[in-house]
Structures are given as structure tokens and as C-alpha cells.
Image (cartoon, rainbow, N blue to C red; front, top):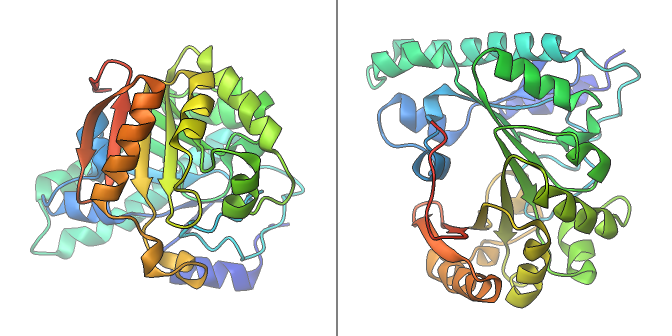
Length: 307
């Protein structure tokens, strides 16, 4: 029995999602499109060396315990927890099949770089961050291992509400979204189904000893969570991550039903806020992307490519 109703399936299909198994999904992004046309890559390409046209944007579950205001996903669309979970190897197999199906259509475009198009059929990266909260999938460590067996790097993005699972993860890079400097802002910005603020702080502490590359990611939304840089710095200090990404909220997708265009900070505003966090945290600016309105901080002001 699938946890995804026919109505939800139609909504997902309309917005470019391909189901992977019975409860996972794959979707191409803007930057894969651009990279396929040799027209640039996402900021993760600039920061860490990922090749956007060889990256699978996927999730093992569409279930999420947050309803973040800034999320471009359809968080209002109901998705039930499965009665039975797909095996990791089945999800990976389905992801690869669907990704190849998604990129196959680019072969008929006169703007496609055919060398990159051929490379796209052999993905090198799995961004486990498409939708939902991946740590709710009980076999996430095994899923990561399945991707690694295929010679792929993995980027896992978690909201930190499941610290027990966070402690088991060994991806190439472990991200944690931190979208509030305090509990009050957290309840406003993330609209959680349950107050898991203490879990988030516990996950930050677990990240400190994870033994893998780590990053804390903050989505900054004006009049919602773009305040108290010292509060963010204190929480980030619990994790001592290799990197901190501060990115502007973008008025895209379903978030347009919750926020206005005025909620988007400019790159200059993101940069100014990042400098305040960096000073309080004793980190330095390592890079940035004005086009994506994102700033990268690191302990030593440097960045280190994964490949």
C-alpha cells in the first residue's frame, strides 16, 4: 500500500517529481539544466566541486515533521508514513532509472552539451535533500552506503529533529538546517508538528564528533528569522562544523503562498548578516555566490573540494 495518494501523485508529477519506489522521489533542478547547457553550476559546484549535471536530487521519503515557511516544497500536501519501507538498494536502483529518464530528454536540444549529457547518465553525487526529512527513513545509513558502493558522493540535509539517526550517518558531507537562533523563532519559522527544539541542539552537539565533513545551513527570511546573529553563532558553536552556509530565502514554489517577495533578503543583506555571524563565531568568509545569494564561512577562511 503506497503512502502517496493519487491526488498527491498528480501534484508531484505536475511539479516535475518522479517517484522512486513507493515513497521516495527524484527531481532535476535549475542548475542541472544550466550545467547540461554548459551555462554554469550551482553554488555547491563552486564551493565543493560537485558537478551539477551529474547530481541526483532525491529523497527516500516525502514525509516531513516541519512545515517551514520558506520551503519551496508542497509541505501542505499530505503524505502518510509508509506501513512498510522500501529497501535501500531498491530506492537507489529506482533513483538511477528515474534520473536517466529525466535527463534523456535533453539529448534532443540544440543547446545541450552532448559530452555533459552523456556524463549525466552516470551520476557522481546524490543530494539527499529534495523534500521531506530523510532521517525519518529508518535505513538512511544503508542508503548512503549503497550510493557509496557505486562510487558516488552523498550530501545529506537534515533538520536535526532525529538526533539518534544523525549520530549514525556517515555521508560525504552532513548538512544540518538551522533556521532559528532560539525556540520562539523556531516555532514561527519552521512550524514543527511537535516542539523538537531540544533535539536540534542535541543533533548539533552530535555533529561535532561525527567524523565526517559537516555544514550548518541557514535560510534567512526577512521579518522571520534574520535576527540575533550571536544566537546563531552560539548554536553553531555546539557543532563546530567545517562550513556554514547562509543563504537568502527565494520566493519560489509553494513558499509563495506563505511569504511575499519582500521576505527575500538581498545578497548584500546576507553578506552583512554573515559577517556578524562569522565575527561572533570566529569563522571567516571562504566564498560566496551573488547569483544564489549565499555566503560560505569556514574555520580558516578556506574551502576544500570533495573531488
